[in-house]
Length: 103
Image 1 (cartoon, rainbow, N blue to C red):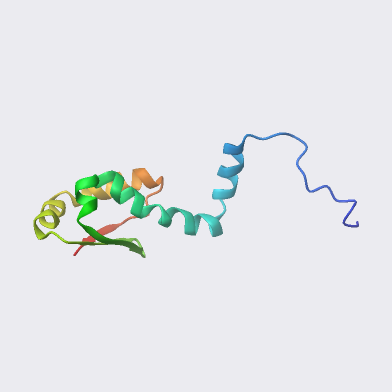
Image 2: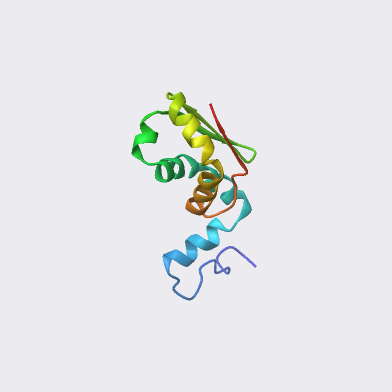
């Protein structure tokens, strides 16, 4: 079968939302997309006042590392760590985060 004989197109029209779900369901793509949502999830969950004193947020092997300028805010956030993890996982759409380290 030659190249011109193949039909790579789907014959039916699909909504863009379904196409994106199909693409994001592929393991190679979802491995990079979901972790990239973590800094945005941090800002959405903790709010703008805490986001202002946040130096950096990064994710490695199920752990989110957050560096803060304020030790007072860090100690307050430590008390709500489990709730923050749960809300961030809900915001991301997948249970990626297992632990949160505040520095």
